[in-house]
Each structure stands twice: as C-alpha cells, then as structure tokens.
Length: 113
Length: 115
Image (cartoon, rainbow over the protein chains, first blue to last red):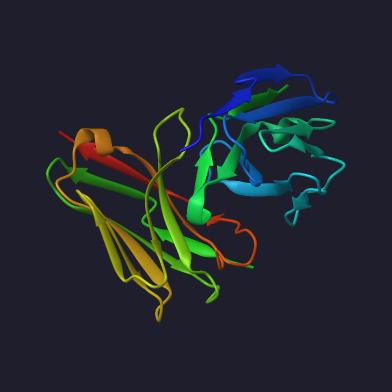
C-alpha cells in the first residue's frame, strides 16, 4: 500500500484563525479523501479530492469552511477556516488503492482554544 | 444516503475467546464492505474487506461474512489476543465501478481482550 504522510501531526490554534493540513503520498493516486474524527467518534467524510477538478463535499461541509486543493496526483491540502472549539478533531486524509480500498494517513490532531 | 449501524459499542472477552462484531447497512447498492482496526492514537488500518459477490472471506484468525439479502455483515475474530484490543470500524461503499466510491462508517466497537 501507499506511504501517506500528513503535516502537521498536531497543532493548537486560537479561535478565528485558519490551519492548512498537508497530505503527501509516495505514488500517484486518482482519488484522495478528507475525513474528520471527533474525539471518541467515528470517521466522517468531509470531501473527495480529484486532481484537476473541484472537490466534492459531503452534506454538512462547505467549501468556505473547508477549502481543499489538489494540485497534483500525490498531494492535497485541507484548510480549516475561521476555527472554533467545535473544530477540534483529528483530520485524516486517505487515498484510494486498488478495488476501492482506502488507506489512511496518520492524521492531524487539531485543538482549538 | 448510506447508513451503517454497528453493534456492540464495546465488547470485552477473555484471551482465547472469539469476538463477533455486527453491522447493518441501508443502501442495497453498496457492495464493498471493509473493516478497519484503530489502535489508540493511530490511524485506521484496513484488516479485511469483502465484496458483494462473496459470502465469506477469511484471513488467518479474522473472517468476515456478508448477507446481502438481510443487508448485514459481521467480523469474526478467533483465538483473541491482547494485541487485538482496539476500536474496530465497519464501513460500506456503493458500486466500485462507477468512478470512485465513498465510505460510510459505523460508529465503532471497542474490543478489550483481557489476558
């Protein structure tokens, strides 16, 4: 499976600020996904990022709050904008492998004060 | 959209016992069902998956069964070991041949294996 890295691994931010999370994979992949995992909860898909097109957002998530870039086949960023304490979560990227499998990055643990 | 229910939320077993986690899904178009194991502070790891053209799949001590008619699938772990302790998530995904698939996850099962 692909090797996936995320930066930063964790951060503590002030409310009202924005944070950009990077996801890097060691091979070219068509689809990349961004998930949120709130403390002690399951994974919720934020959006799907396909290189060369606008990201597709799931219900309850909007581009103004979570803008996503996908400049090439190995990299994507997720920005959490105008943060509030409710945005405190782990943010994970994943990449699609063969036959619909998905592999996850190590996650970014975000705390908003 | 898809809705995945997972039970139980916690499961405690003795080392060597078997553990079974069950999931149901709502979208009859779903036909890919992966299971992930997430240890504390770590990323979810894919441990086994099954597609709708298969009723059962086994990998050493882990097996998954699928009943498409009833829309439920289960994870079976035999001869449990303390290192099996983790949160397990099931997920469901629609047809893999429509471009790309998204995963809908269950709420997770915390499995505790006591020595």
